[in-house]
Image 1 (cartoon, rainbow, N blue to C red):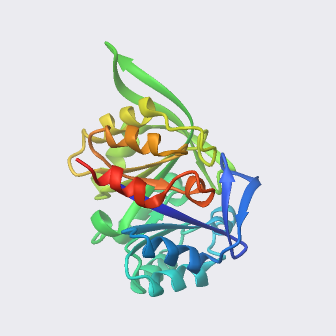
Image 2: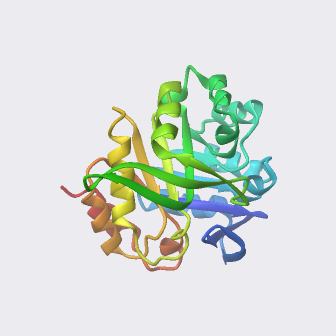
Amino acid sequence: MLIIPAVDIKDGLVVRLYQGDFSKQSEYKTDPLSAALHWQTLGAKLIHVVDLNGALEGIPKNKDWLIKIIKELDIDVEVGGGLRDAKIINELLDVGAARVTLGSKVFSDFSFLDNFSSILSEKISVSIDAKFMKLNTQEGIVSDIIMEVANSGWKKSSEVSLNDCFKKIYDKGVRFVNFTNIKLDGTMSGVDVQVISAVISRANVFPGLKLIASGGVGSIADIEKLKKIPGLFGVIVGKALYEGRLDFKQAVKVAEGS
């Protein structure tokens, strides 16, 4: 399981939001490139970078920072936030982005993925940011999850069946999914193992679909819990790292342990 540090950028600053609320943000005294280089120095294999202004406004506003980070780092960089134009997405891929994460555009128009049909399995991930979840069960086993998925900078939402969502993006060729539990994001209050396990159970229906989870990580105990979930590809961690609640190297050691 990968430990993936997050670098969220708003107005050129590294910030973390609380439950996706732009009025509740923590700012950190480091520029985005320095933050990304710091995690690389500590041994990160992948960095998750999001342009929060872009997510809110629908067009990248911190693209220069995204490009700087992609070019300067020697490790993989995944970028997202307001990427709803094929030209800009291809520009970021051309300068070396390992993957581009798409959310709002996909949920408003799944056919947008057709623009990247030849690279969907490796270069594109779909972000599912869930505000509300209802677990449907049959004989005690989760059969589907009905979610209220946030988009447009988490200001709008739509009801989505996780089964249907996975099938649509899988049939298109997508193999990477980022799943965020918004209720827990930025809270450091602990992960919801039941929800992540349920999401993984639905993902496992589709061979090769890799799930990256985020939301709630606040301690090494959370990493230990997530490590026990079979099939979880990685976890994105932000605030707990910046606040000193989680030691990155220790987290990696636990995540990579057998």
